[in-house]
Every structure is written in structure tokens, then in C-alpha cells.
Image (tube, rainbow, N blue to C red; front, side, top):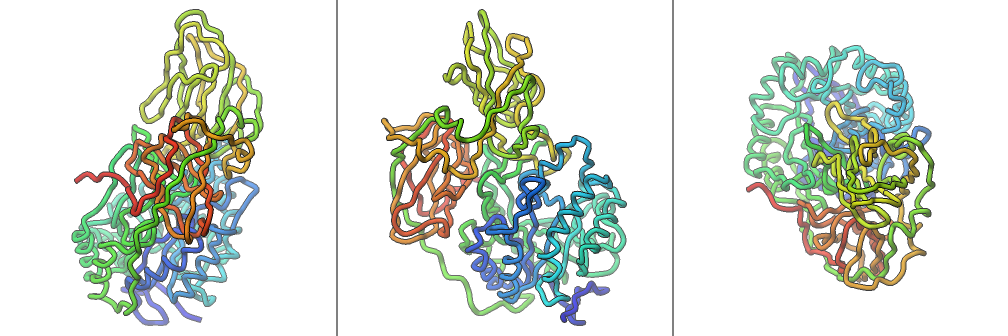
Length: 584
């Protein structure tokens, strides 16, 4: 069997120096029918390895579930890597960041309130042990010393930016070895003395994460690891976007020059990202460094291969750089044509109020529960109570995570938004009747100390200064729109008033990648042929949603939208993506 090891100066494959030229490609952000295409294009750019995180919470949405099917079939993904003649680096976390919901940690892990996250704590380590035992049948037989593609496994992820518990890292190593992983283990940290020292332990090979000043940063890494191959295992060639901000891009020329410097220094590399993909469904993460900022649906990342798998200017520039240092294949990807632009209209609609009972079960509570306490770890929850006020009154909530549409007697009152630090809203004089708050979890924080915080309404709700008790709460099941189809009725008018579900049908001559234009809609989520594309928001910067050809068909296709505010009834598709304005 092949032998892969960490040598004194280089990685070694069967006793010969081997430079890792890798690209990040997250299987859980790409439709499985497109995995092989993206992997092949990485090889065509000159890469020899594919790196992926493993998103624990995607595989284990509930404590008693573990899913390795469909788009979560990690074994199939790694087999596709091997079939393309490439190697694989796997980063199972357990924490991955990745701008992914909760940094990949399952929200159910935090329900006890006593679990110690990312440290040597028995409950946390026991859960990790179960997780890695569930992954072992996929990873162990696919290691290079068993004839598979996996050459490296990463322990934790940029741990030096979070903690310094060496015993925790030692326990992770023990658990990974105990399940049968025998390939070399690595860590990654930003190249500062503090992070490099805190984020690793003896026996783990240190790598760095950066996107510029390659020579300087590799020198810092070398000062903290005197032998072994130099590697940037996250070469940041782009960046991610938040709702309400601009679309991030990086200079092609500068990124290529920094990559050239890195390779000229003899280092190995993993491009983060080679192909970013999409935060389909409700999987996006968020950041909160004083202001809550949820990630958009696109994870295009300004990567060499764009969200739809098209080579960009950066792809060709990187290919030229790689060709200076290693052999590249003769075959190249073909250019993608502009996407079809069918048009349609939203013709059927039903108000949320008319179908809410079909989307979940109501539960009764004296005090306001969090969504997590109800076992709901993503999506929406409807909170309902009765109030009666004489004169003017103010609604106050200790904290909203993350956005609440407030209505009284079915009439909109306003919005409480976490990113605006909203906690109070004026009610109409003499407010009485049914008070409802439709709360949206817009994505869990994926970096820093706020990982694992619960969602929904947090603390007390007061009206006129008095705590309101007696709540009925329903968490909406929105994995699919099946429950609303039979309730849809013809739309009367040119717009959809939210919160409502609406449907359109559109025709295609053949299945092809599309870009759904959401610029005339307010805020909500979309399914096409039952596949959950993700979130849209007029706030931008993103104004199109990528639709993989694999979820479409020749003939009639169905689109269902859950609109929270208001949407024009038109349905349009764009020939190219619109990810918004940049900062230059």
C-alpha cells in the first residue's frame, strides 16, 4: 500500500518528496451530482488534492440521528476524489467555523447548559467520540495506507484563536486514533506566535492560514516549527459576505503573486476556497463582534471556480502560477454558457395564518421558551399570547435571536431585529387581542464565544412594563413545502402580501443551471421542485440565487416561496449571477 508521511523537510509519498497542491471543496455545499465536475476542474487547474471539512451538525441534526445519504454521502465524495486520481485532506473538526451554522457544532449539544465547548469536558468529549465512531466506517478504509485517497486529517480548527487547552487536544488525538485513523494529523492557526503555540501540541504538524505576505508568514511558521514541510492549509483567495454589506472580491494579480511566492518558497498549499458553493437551505452561519451579521446564501467566495462551477479569471491566473512549479494537465474546462432566462408569475398563494397548524404542533408555556428548548435548532417559530392594554403601551423583549415580525390581531405592528439591537416596539393605543411574534433564526454564530447560544425569544417579554405569561408556541417545519400545496389558492393581484406562501410554475426545454432573480421580492426562502435553495433578502448584496441543474427538469418546474414581507408576483431568472456591489 502507498506510504505517506511527514518528512524532515517535505511531505513524502512512497519515500519521495511530495508537494500538496490542494483546493477546498465542501461536499455539503455542492449538489452531489456536481461533485465530480468540480473535482475534475480542480485537477485541470493543476491541483493534486481536495480538502473538505465535515459538518457534524449537517450529519446529526438531532442527537439520535446520523445521516450519510444523498448530499451528505462523504464516502461517495471521497470515492469521486480517488476516481479523479487525486488525494484528500479531511477536517472533521469537531468545530469547523467555515461560515457554517454554529461552526458545525450541533445545537442539541448545548441543551444541557453544562457542556464545555472546545475544551477537556466529559460531556463534550463523549459526544465527539460518538461522532467520530459514526464517521470511522467512512474515513478509516479510505486512508492512503488502506488504498484510499485520504492523506491527512486535521485536529480541531484554528484552536489557537479560541483556547489553549492542551489536554483537550491530546484527548482529540486519542479519540481519532482510537477509531482507526492512522494518517498524519495536522493543526492550522493564523501565523502569530500566540495562536501557533496555543493551537497545537507536540506530535501534531502545524500549518498556517493566511492570504497575503506569504514569505513573511511562512517564516513565522518556521520559527515555531523547525522541521517538517511548510504548508498554508488555508490560503485565503477570497472572502465571505454578510447580508447588508458589500460583495467581497480580491485582486486576481495580487492573489496570484502571493500564491507564486508561497510555491517558490517550497511550501504546500490548500486554496480556501477552490470552489465555495452554496449555503443551501438554512445552513449559513453568522458573526457577532458587537453587531450580529448573518452570512448570505451564496458562498461563492470569489474563488477560482465560481458558485456555478465556471472557471474565473482567478482560475486561469492560478493555473499559470502552478504551471511554473508543477506539471498541469493538457485538458482544460470548457466555458459555461449564459443561463436560460425563463419567466413566470406567482399564481397561487396562501397566508401563513391559514396553514400554520399544518406546519407543526402548538405547545403551551407560562414563560417564553427558546427555540432550542423546544428541540427546534433552525428556522422559524411563532409565539402567540393574548394582551389587553388601556391606553399607550410598549412591547419589550429582553433579546430577539434573530428577527421577529410583530403583529396584533393579524395586523403588522413592526420588526424587532437583532442586528439593529431592537428590544422595544410601540403598540397601538388600547392594544388588545392576539399578539404574535414570528421569529426567524437567521443563522448561528460560527466564530468566537457566542457559539452555541440558543435562538428564539430570550428572557422575558413585557407589555406596558408587565411580564407577559401564557404563551402558545409553534416551530415551523419547513424542510419541504409539501404541507402547504393543497391550501394554495389563486392569487388576486400583482403582489404577494407576507407572511405567505406562493407558487409559480415555469418551463424549461432542458435542465440547466439557473439564477433566480429575487430583486423584486422582500425577504424569505425558496424551494424549486422541493429542493430548498436558501434565503433571499432585498437588503442584498446578493440578488440572485443559484439553482443547480440537478434539481431541474425539462418541462414544468415548480417554485414555492415563503415571503415574509411583500413580493411582486413576477418570477424572473438572470443569465448571470448578481452577488451585489463591491467596495471598489
